Length: 309
Image (cartoon, one colour):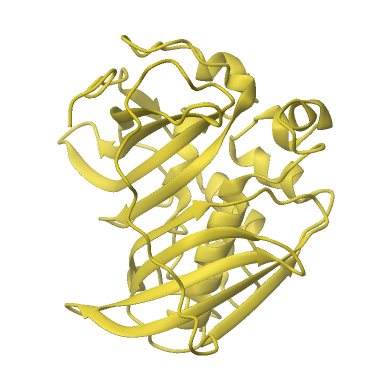
């Protein structure tokens, strides 16, 4: 598809991580003590939780706190307006797990390679920038994971760009109860812990940016909810084995405030692509709106979690 900005490739970005990063990520998204393969570096099956690569474009190769706004504005996409990074939120995200991520990048050279798939003018609501980001072994070009996602620039539309294609929908079944329901109680500290993975957007730490965007104050990272829900699916349907999930996606439908309780509902569809069963899911704030919609995963469903030594 052609259009303004389409095909633009960001400069390849070196990324790195250590075992401590992997442990922190697993802790921050809700992995539990019966899943020591994600939480204890000496476990014989010590593994990186499969969605970890979504944090790497934010983290880069540093252990230090990052100026989120400066990083977002570091590279301009030619042929489109400049957008205000202080008013950006996630739109939707698909992650494909192609190879297991090593517990540390030490001794290897990894980078993220990102290209623009589309820039869509949604009028008064804002602008969507859709990108594909691959985590790549720079020494041989091997791709470990691929994320296709969109950033939504709130209130920054009406610049004359293309409206973009209709997105494919994966609605949850309405005619039967979910096969799995799981929940978590967020706190005032949930986002403050999650941001230590490398996503230092001030929107998730202080109320001023959220007030500016009409959210009323601080909101929790959409990617926290995204990663938390993936963990719950893997724990409840995939025996907490990262090899039992192939694709995972969701749309960020509404914000989550610190202190909200999240409730996820998942349905097995009985529809298979080879060995992979399609799972549909949604996450809502208890008593309130759906915050993750269009949820879909391809999984091997094998039973309850088993993560102890």
